[in-house]
Length: 82
Image 1: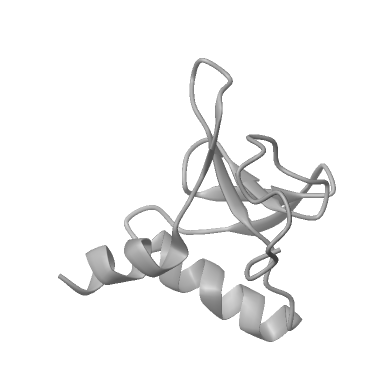
Image 2 (image 1 turned 135 degrees about the horizontal axis):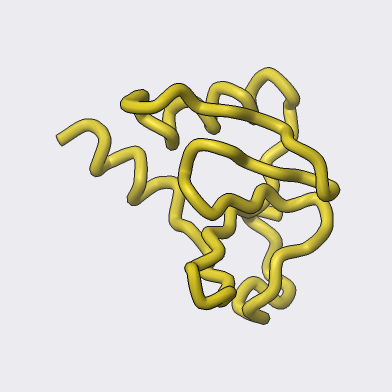
């Protein structure tokens, strides 16, 4: 989870983390948790969803090669504000 000091960089999402391949559909526990409309800022939508759920898991992007990349939500929100 965000803020946990244990193995943040182990390279693998945990079951309760959000996972996306396209920054539109976010999955948690193997199920679709959130769909962001095309053209909408995904980071803002995801943060709003996390606030509603009162749960702040890590967010991972899975590349087309199948590699997991931990997303920096603070950095993503900054880019949306530019």
